[in-house]
Image 1 (cartoon, helix red, strand yellow):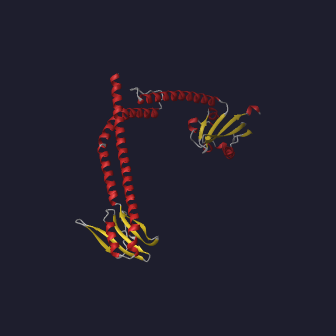
Image 2 (cartoon, rainbow, N blue to C red):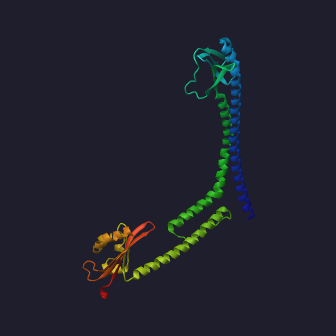
Length: 353
């Protein structure tokens, strides 16, 4: 017994360990990528801020005197940074000078442009910032600087890919270990319980009990199910006893007792109804009352009015068709738990008249 429990405890410990390692590994990958991405973005933003500040002052003198050669040299200096791909310089009169960086396999070249550079369509990796250029507190123009985020996202994708690769390499082993552990510790016992409860539900044999094979959580669940089955079986016995008692009372009543649902289908037909109509209970149940016993059709309208208003009706000293007897007829509406119907109680009072 001790060896058995040791094995179960070891199996559960290994299962918990595997799940913990998988969670820690996945969370570590996500956190590393998150913080590394934020650091890269922060560094890029700081670099953009520093260059923007230098542009504001380095271009001021050249743009004030319209020194295009000096501006071209400044453009090349800015574009030598791997972050930038193009630059447009504007005066208060419009576009003045521009330059783009051309990358090839052998070298990097710079090309002066006579039209403003525009971001190509569908290229989401290139973005731009605008920097005002001032000379002695006077606004002389602005610089439109284009930078690429492709290198940033390339690094992010690389780290993400490597992290996910290391994570998914361990997934098959984790899945295999989880499968065998869960199958042994949980799935098989649960399937046994499931199949057994299905059989109980199909046969309504609530007096059956499940076998308890272990003292762990599954064993505790099995014990709870057994307790529940015992309670259901006890209540089922009590309900059946009450049903038999009520049926005996209804059948022994001297009054005719007929019940129908909201569609006029007969649901109750006691022995007194059999004696009055000559129709057996088995032939009456499930049939339409007004078709089976048309002598009551004169009470059809008032009975459904009684159902609508939830008010009982009584009709005293009545004759039903050509039956040479007198009756008191009582109509009771039934509205219980969403089920609607009507109960007729017919008392023979011929001897009292």
